Length: 245
Image (cartoon, rainbow, N blue to C red):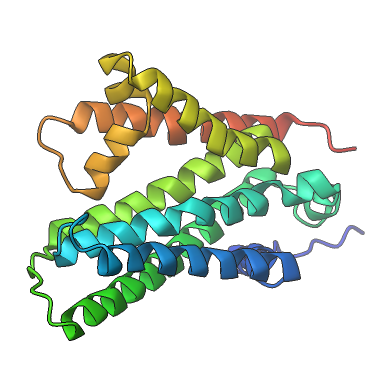
């Protein structure tokens, strides 16, 4: 008689993926670098007040830019680490439904982005405190739209990295592509408004960060489809079909 075992709870899968992103020595070092880069970036408007708007929203946006330099790399490693190390067969043996595993990795990445966003907000608040303690006048313009734009910007960057990792399934290739592709399209964007507004992520994602949706919603939607939805869907298909034997 065949014994049927209860499926692994999805929450447990998410916890396992979260552990892979945070509990290893390499992951801790990388997260420490994320914290360091975010803090360093958030201090820039404090020490260079003439180069940045001295507003609450501006400080939050600068922290968001610092946060998304390396946090997407953590998400990529969560997606690609098992493929690169050859341990994915063990994972799929324990949970044969591959899309559940991929969904758990995506969910853990979203949690990672949320935790990073909270940290970035705390760092931005600390920067504002330092600026205020120095006697500087700061404009309190932090609206719900500014906060939402900041959160979406962080999540979009993380999910784009997740999508790239799911598609390429190689740590080195995905990390290299996450830096090289935006840089290449940014260079091309200087020669073409079409590329700058629709394909390069610089303008559309800056509009998200600044919560500047008026007149830009088509470009933002296309950018999200191009850099998040399509590669993630292709990565899901590849995950299901790829031979891991």
